[in-house]
Image (cartoon, rainbow, N blue to C red; front, side):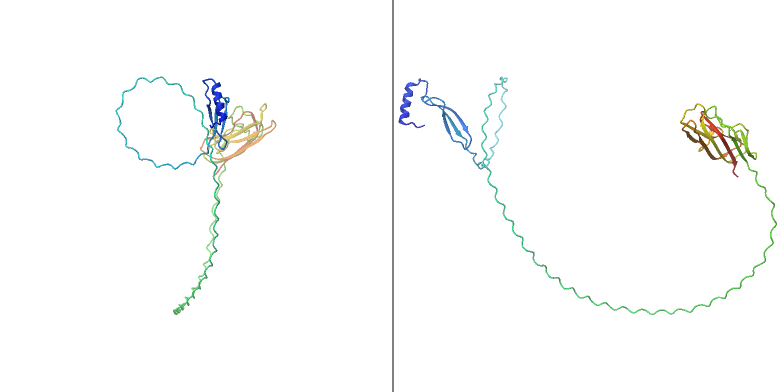
Length: 320
């Protein structure tokens, strides 16, 4: 700071009037200002004992200098002997206060991007060359001469046709054979029109009347359910019945019947029907080809005892 003659006289006056501990000029704080701002000095004291605080703007970030070449690595020294272990570690000292973070320098502006150069013009396509002349086709060679056809040999003479033979006279008619006898058929047709309700599940239905009996191979006793086959062989058996709910039976009701051979169901003869109303009914019928041995008993069995059966019939006859 430069003082004029008046300033110096003022300084001398202040020195004579200020306490001995007061220096004529004291330096206060120095603050870094933003780049581009003006520098300044602020007096926070008095004219006799000024305290000057400086504001100095931060300069723009300079260009990074070129990195110098890396120097050669020095030779590694020998490792010294390990010293004795020290005494116990002393207590850790208190952590010092964190220093203030320095202001970040302003990044300089980015220079403008250079203009893109013009794309060169594509030159014109050169003309297509002329097509060459097609060569002349050569002449076709001459066709070779056809060879001469061989001579056909003479046809042989046709043989004479043989004479037609004379038809002989018809032979005499043979004598008529004896009249054969027809085999005796074996058949049974039994019925029961009246209503019947089985006492237990698995009971056979009974047949009250034998409407037709032929031969001796199939027998049935009226008002029983057993159809007995006295002779073995192949037989065709059919059956039909009408089923309705018995008194007190609840509906809907599923009913079924089947043919049994000596107490065992004949496969394929189980017939099922449904009764959906108390006054309703359903017809159950079926048929089977059965090969039996002498003494076999066939029955038509009910699988329910809550059903009344009527118009029941069974037919059986042998097949030669």
